[in-house]
Image 1 (cartoon, rainbow over the protein chains, first blue to last red):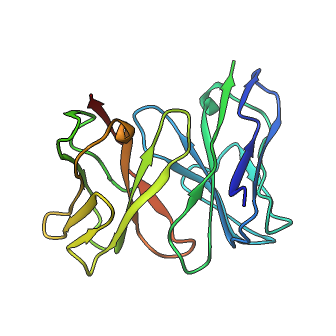
Image 2 (cartoon, rainbow over the protein chains, first blue to last red):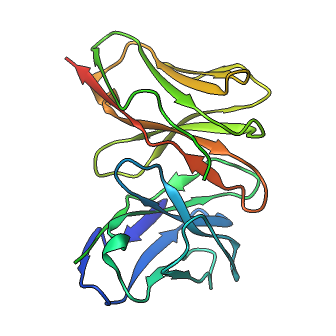
Length: 112
Length: 113
């Protein structure tokens, strides 16, 4: 199993540009989540999904959209990037009823 | 978010010594805790977990202690090795819809050979 994969590894955007961060897992996990990690702060939940077709907001959802059309994929969309969205983004997945999450390697995003 | 914090931002230990990393949490209703290890440029990796009905749990070279009275969590690493150098942080599960976790800021552990 590849586990949780994320692409791209690194991205530079200009303010106002849009992009999609990709996340995929091959473990057939129901739960998937997106977090951002900023210096001096713990991981913060952006959006999560408890299954295909179901998404919900986390702690810091503003500026981000998600969709879950399949169990495997959970893309994160930035519609109009802002410098405040410069961060490292992690996708995670876990099986329903099990709290242990598996994290992807992260995407480093720089918004100029 | 919840106040899940660590007492020390950095910790240096000699190879072979034991390491202790601490974490404080503020929500007495939290019932599940996880310690993660994060190496530079990588995603967090699960180390060990503990439920609130336990005081202690041991894994391979790691032990987690939970003191619910003072809302304190610690991670003990025995015979610390250079490969243990990383950032360690705790996560607190509040429960509810989606079982959201709240994460501490992390302690950077450096093992001196």
